[in-house]
Length: 198
Image 1 (cartoon, rainbow, N blue to C red):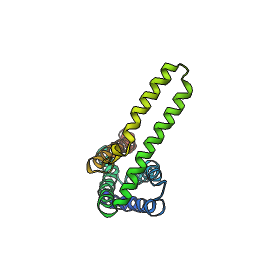
Image 2 (tube, rainbow, N blue to C red; image 1 turned 180 degrees about the horizontal axis):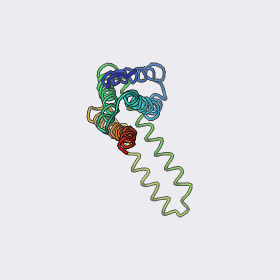
Image 3 (cartoon, rainbow, N blue to C red; image 1 turned 30 degrees about the horizontal axis):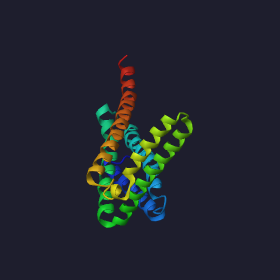
Image 4 (cartoon, rainbow, N blue to C red; image 1 turned 90 degrees about the vertical axis):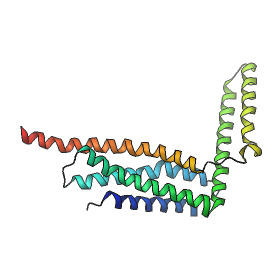
C-alpha cells in the first residue's frame, strides 16, 4: 500500500516522539544523556532510512520513476518527521520540563569531563620523558578550568541555535540517503526502457 510522503512524515514524527518519551519516561536517570545519544545515533537513523526506502519502493512497484520523484519520495517523509520532531523536542525541553534540560546539560558536561580524564590517563601512561609529562599535566589543568562550576554555569547545548545546528547535520543525512535512493530506483526504471528500445 502506497502512502503519500507527507503521511509517512507524520508517522515518522509520531514514531520519533514515542521513542523520545519512552527514553524520557523510563531512562531519565544517571544514563539519560547516554541513552538519548544512542537512540539518536542508532535507532532513529534506521527507522528514518527504512521509512524513506519504503516510501520509494512502494511507489516504484507500480510506477515508473525518475531521479527527482524518487528523491522527493525519500526526502519529504524524513524532512517532515525530522523538523516537526526537532521543534517539539525543543519546545518540550525548554518550556514543559526544564529539569530534564538541566539534567541533559549536566550529563553532557560530565561526559566531556570523563572523556578528558580518560584521554589524560591513557596519554600519561604512554609518555616516558618528564618534560612531556609536565606539558601534558599543564594542558590538562588548563582544560579542567572549563569544567569549573563558574565555567559550566551558563553552558546550554539545547538552545535554539544548537537545535538548528543539529538539524543542519541531520539534513545532510537526509540528502545523502535521498540521493542514493533516487539514483538507485531511477537506474532500475531506465533499464527496461532501454531493453524495449533495442
